[in-house]
Length: 494
Image (cartoon, rainbow, N blue to C red; front, side):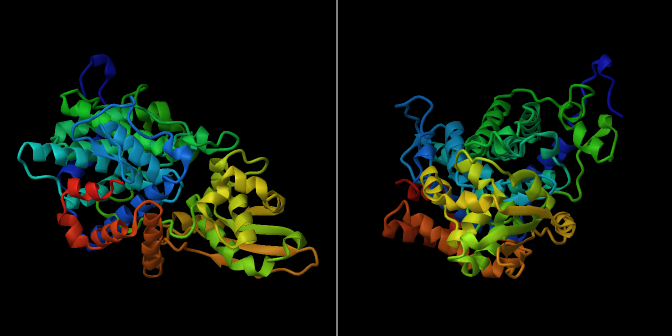
């Protein structure tokens, strides 16, 4: 029973917060799959960051809060010469990893990108390693970074399994803030009280609105929102380390807590519980599940719900090459989440608008047989009027079986199918893709392609000798785990 607030009896920390703290402080990563996948996730995330640095709209946001600021032992931003305080470094690292919508993904009742937490993890670890060296202490090893990744992924992902924040209009980056606060406090050496204080303050911040992800307001904030959340997690961990008290009943407090203020709508709509008792649901305890099952965006820089439709459209490209004007309609059959968040009509006003449009992704894939980051840019879009003409001919339908399998914990499919109908009356085959190339069920097929993606992204930023060195270091799990974080980050400075 929750305490009566009128009696002013300070409660114990909410059980969710206690569970997160105990997990972060005491869980030992014993899964070889989790270790190996964390290495691949680090590789892929850094590659996405390097590629993003080719885009001026991204790089204009980077650098110190105040130009000319110099930070002793400052954290490095990969692919740049910036040396920043850990809070701004977390912002910048998170921004460049997420900018092109090309980093790993988690899909469940809530969505998100657990590698967004790398902003906090790398910034804090790099800064602490350098500080410890100046005191004659041993630096943090990259094995700790990989362990922090497993834990941050798990906190964000398990919270997302059965709790739909998007249905109440909240953005998934609030889970980045919570996970980043937890692992940042742990990296800084916080005890149980300190971790709980940081996590509780992360919940007090409430939730960011999803407005910037959806028509008609889709915009570039979706590319830096995760960096902002990860950075905030670092700041809250700093406050906890200074002794700032937590807010133990932040989730369950009657009238003023997170559940009553921000979360009641989702479970009330689903008729799971009355609004006053809409607590989070946990189908499983914290472990290594999320890292082991993370989804990689290997071939296509597009919102993950569109990955299978994109792959199907590229398969059909050869059948429509030279016949785009002969198409009467294109039918895309997909799952409910894709219908709800990335299906849109009307003008597409910026790159962020386009990479979150299922019809745009399918149209480009059909016409060009590929999908590259530059295909979302204004100049490309304006040069190719045929994209919008074909987009207007695309009809999107739900397959309830796809929607069911999307939420099935034993499948976690992201299925879509594409079929083309020509004016002449003939049709293409209906091409169905159940699992995208980055799914765990296609790991063996996907890992060589993931490594090739990393090599290509390295080449956009580093000379060949440095790129080869980076690839070799990050491709050897045992060597990587033993490497001091500061030495690893040295390799990323351009």
